Image (tube, rainbow, N blue to C red; front, top):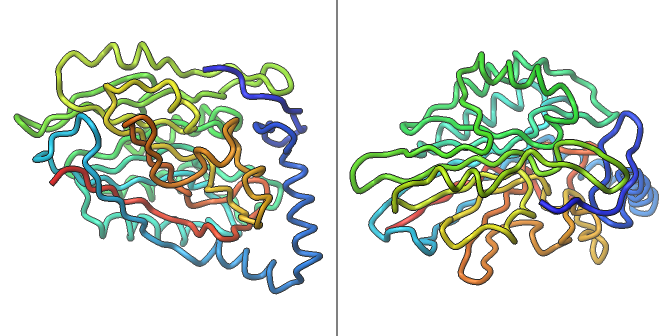
Length: 308
């Protein structure tokens, strides 16, 4: 994975990952939004982050996926556990809604803890992990780590997932299902796991190693925290599932693409992306980063139905 460019590393905060836009400028931009639009906008964006919760559904049969192979997937991305918008009660609600979907498999796409400076309720790792342990699916619950998990409290997050009996996938692939219903699930290491210098990171991702473990013709699903890897994903992968962007989180007209933490801006910001016959779905996620607000991109659980 090529380094993301360029950025400064802000003390006690997350590194920037988009040219010309920092988390500090996002904070300043949000403050300006509040000043210009008034307390109503601030109140609405806070309520959108803390109270709204939707299920966004996709139905598709991507290339390489047998039309008769039906699979339902619940995707949970970017929880960022911590108040004011993702306290214990809110996480409980997320799990209840996710379980009500009765999907075949549940995928957790990383970033489990809130790290912004406005946290009002600290949710210990053991607490949010115990909630996630209640997730149920016939083919199991599977997780990857996100950049925040590497930058903050990595060891504690790993331990929490282990205690919750949620398998963590890092550059690994496993064969799931039986008979004609088999498919590969691959989980990629985080692409910006280690800060090196302003605008440069070293990832833990190894896509060739991950895909080299696939030794049958069964279709492949790929979990990746950041969507930028999609430019390198080969046709062998039927569907890539990603998070990280929060859909832009604060969709201010005209300028929101600059807030997307991707070197590709709005290209991979959100939703179903199809390029060259390859498919990716990017979740808008659940929690918040930098500021506890969402505007125009409410928290969501994603449900994907493949085949049929």
